[in-house]
Image (tube, rainbow, N blue to C red):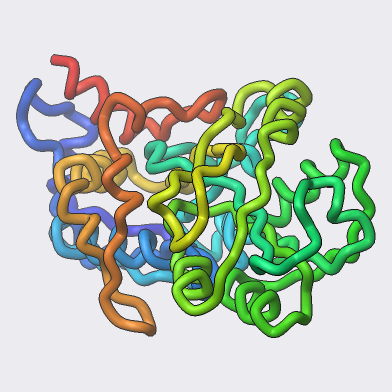
Length: 317
């Protein structure tokens, strides 16, 4: 599955390039697989846009997307060699000793996700502790939503009836009364919640105390944040938790290939917002407005892939 570079690209990588010159390799029909996320998730949408732009801007490279459960599932597929690239939330990636899983590194930080706790407008749930004993979607199995919501429930000592549903399935189950609340760790706004709010009144439950608890227990990947009043129809601004998302690569991807991918992401960040194409057609990606060089290098304790690190060094020259 290892991508093949042309002889000229290998020679360039071995001999180095002049400062300020393009390092994009001549790629001999490299086919890459990018792990994204489930239906109704921003990962699916932004992953499709990234794949489309990389395929269009890195000569000879073709990137296909692979639907998944999201963060934890993507890490598993990367380590197993099933995909070359993948999206993940930073908290699901960082191990207890602060290191990255073996064989993986970051290309860049992309955007921050916000933890949503959503109920229908008429729900008796008014605050986090009201979740005790309630039917709650924890997100899809192996997703960042599952990872973070389980941490929140454990720190809050809340015993809920957890269900494992994708974002789209969670929104449908909440609408139909099959669950009482749903967690969703995702960009703002996220398609599944947007569509639900447009048809049925919803409420967002504040998570400011939970943000403080996470920040204290797990320093590094969490920050307090606000879901703005403009995000979802009828919902006021709500305090919550933010978690950065990063684009990962296998360490065995050639440096010059990753350099070209990094260049494409930051050179075309503005057009990435126009979206890629998934099974539902073209989608806008407002989260891509967060992509910028200043925050892109901020991947906490997760090392950058050498090709990405070289691109950021080149920018400083």
